[in-house]
Image 1 (spheres, protein in one colour):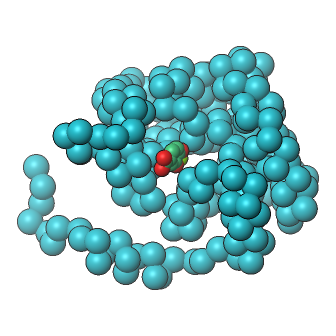
Image 2 (cartoon, rainbow, N blue to C red):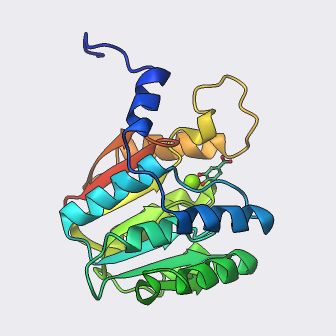
Image 3 (cartoon, protein in one colour):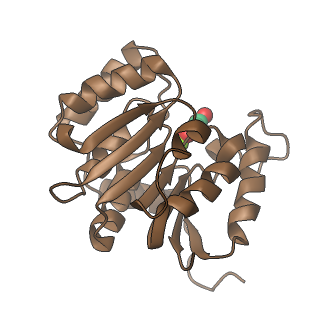
Amino acid sequence: MLSKADPVTREHFQYIIDRTAQEDPFLQDLKQAAREADIPAIWISPAQASFMQILLRSSGAKEIIEVGTLAGYSAITMARALPQGGRVRTIELNLEFADFAERWASQSDVSEKIEVHRGSGEEVLATFESHSADAAFLDADKRNYPLYLRESLRIIRPGGLILVDNAFAFGELLLEHPSDPEVQSVRDFNDLMAKQEGVQSVIVPLGDGVWVGVKTDD
Ligand code: DHB
Ligand code: MG
């Protein structure tokens, strides 16, 4: 049931965005270079990035895995929330995207904290040890989200954080006739996540909707 509180409107979201830390010139330059390299402009928003950093810092995360590097924006953002010795292992199937992200990560202030792994999520996740991460961020092909969730729940420790992008399906979640073929995959995944045992989770309406979950048992 909805509460009687004011419904959240577009204006509320704009208000939130206006009061959230903006990205630095390095990330602005990264985005510009990514556009020039014809990398799809589908990185996370600054408000979502800040929120994810808050979650990572407050949970004391040291080891993060990511599926879907794209240009490296989220990997760099997340790495900035890690303590010394922390690491983001990020997986990218597209070799051009992986090269771009690796180049930008190496020029960033968190170059020592990012490892780009080339291959499919399925292949690479299988090589990661169980309980070897504190947090996971899923942001790749939506059809394989169930597989990435299963593997992430193996790889993160109990109490670990699981973040999943695009719960609102590129803004098309509630459309009767969505144009994007991945919308149905997102809907199916949302239903799966909502009843997933061993995870307490909620969709947070920042960016395109981000699932935030905690692994409650093994
Ligand atoms: C789109 C956005 C994303 O964040 C993503 O992971 C995939 C696609 C999009 O807007 O199409
Ligand atoms: Mg995404």
